[in-house]
Image 1 (tube, rainbow, N blue to C red):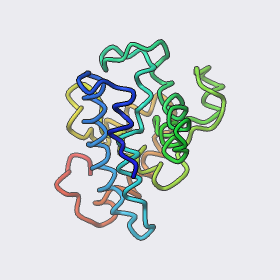
Image 2 (image 1 turned 90 degrees about the vertical axis):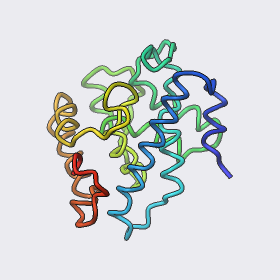
Image 3 (image 1 turned 120 degrees about the horizontal axis):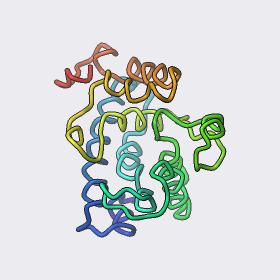
Image 4 (image 1 turned 180 degrees about the horizontal axis):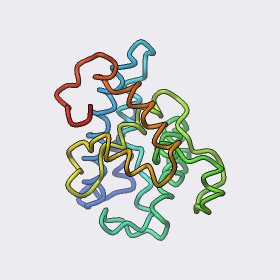
Length: 196
């Protein structure tokens, strides 16, 4: 049985800042993602996969230069997705690997990569499966550092952060809110009024 924590400890010292931030962030994203999955329970999302993917989606950050996260790699932070994909593909975990690559923003298209000269392989890195979309959606609500690290960001703040990347990115997030927000789906928000 796959244990995400044992995979993380292959690449991260359990006493390190990066490890601590990854674990806390992964659990927060996982809990939020499982709540979001309730809104589409009729589509039978793979809950076990969602929990594991939430813990591993940022595994590639140690390759990046992100001192605030305790990471001293030499790659830009935006590269952590495809670098995480490479790590998990080497382990034969293709489905989890795709979550790593596709969770950034609301997805990065090959056109985005070309137009913005991003330091990424030129291919679509957009969430496709239901589980990929749920993880990407939930990830938008939590930072790994700062005051919003353990508390969900507001929908309006997330939309404002996406706007510089284009109105279509905001529109995609709004579609996810409508689909995955339990209150929008007519279900209990679990007390998370700040994100409803």
